[in-house]
Length: 359
Image (cartoon, rainbow, N blue to C red; front, side, top):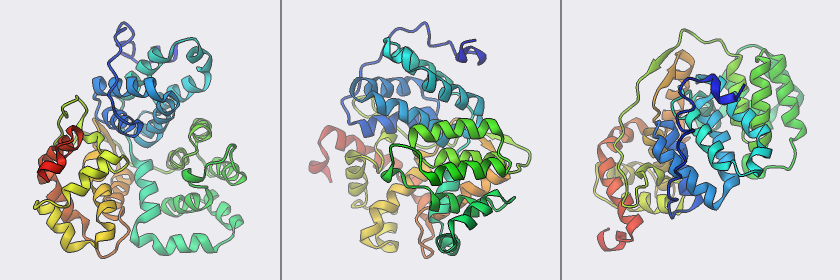
């Protein structure tokens, strides 16, 4: 059976031979647009972002789609994650025979409407940065690797296990050509801790292709008990289409254009910019604003899977991503929601080159 036929409506795009015109943007902006469009179920924009990446840097398209599976969909629709991973694992032959665009449209059709669960990313952010977990991070560095692996196999202690995994695993900026010994031992420990075999197998394949920690977090969450689940409607976050049809949320802190927009925004007289000037030292303003924009705007999804663990992890990530115990970031988040129109106007000026004349 075709992997995509198991999902009702997944063949919707098969009859569409039209391929959108690529944007003239960097791969970083295109990847941002792709991921955030899939989060919000903006299929038309996701397809144009995919067309842009396919025209300029195809490997980034496939890696980013795999990353989206574990960062944004996860346990919300793991059957769809499995289908995407299996397709990109076994579909190399099809890609070599000119099936790149049809494959991209099929994968986007699977991921866009999927129920999203961003718990894996929230868990990673909390484990890496939350100031209340600083002591646990220090302890993870102090104990031996044998002790770390033993703790991974014990029940419970979700945050402690996530910290241990981030400590043991090389960061994505130090990727290796083959899985490290540490990563293989982590997967064994997760299997022994009760993670379902299917989740471990699929997540291992995702890790093998991306070298990112998020697949491990998904496997870790799969063995954690969950209370009754429900779905949450999307949060409304102000966005607009820039003059070239690019969604404004594509300009984030991971591209030159996004950084320029945030830098200019910090110089405005908005309530958000004044708060940053009063509360955050200059050297950290850009990075913390980038993280805040992501928490408020970039993590918005079409339908979110909710349960007690997911809600708790999201709260930890929202309030602790900056790592500073002195900052009350919730105040800035409230202000930012009211100032997105100004930020989007600045993004538009960055795109058109009018920023210097206005800011």
